[in-house]
Length: 225
Image (tube, rainbow, N blue to C red; front, side, top):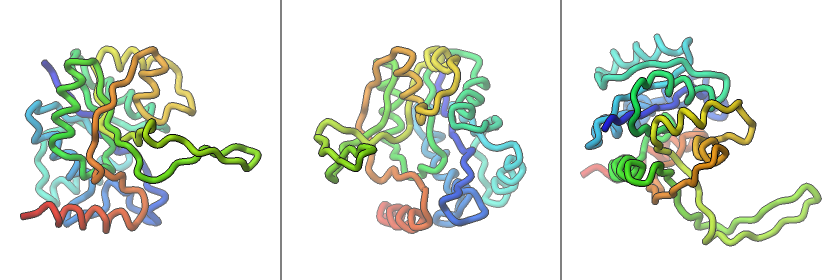
């Protein structure tokens, strides 16, 4: 079986108040996305790794690889205006069928077990999407200002990786982009596939705000012997 990992790294990181995109910020001495890539590189399935990155940032990335002696083999693909376009660009680099995991470069703390399980479940069930139950109370809001409590036991907070059979995902991505397509699961669901949710690790935060770097750093230090 062929395995692939598409690391989506096209974000600009505007909410970080930093001129450097968040995936390139240093986390414990190395760029954020290097942490995520290495988890996939070290997993038992040994996927071929495709990094989707803005064309204007690719030279910068290659310089970072040299600076940090980062030698994980990978292919570069050009990102697009939307995440949808970036994933589609990454998929175009895959010529054979197999299992592909889509992961956000800004999620450096995905666990080894979650990545391995994502591939295994997608192999047997067709797809797997990482999520976990919220611990906070959740309410729906309406334009008139009213709110309504939701049953959090029935809700899942969705993360990445989101893992699928290659040919099925390519078929789903033939549709035109829609604003509601915020992740791959929504694209697949729109095409008609049921989505299998598997348990994620809560540490798998997405680096979005400046304080997230400090939180991620603390989590890494706690994992060290």
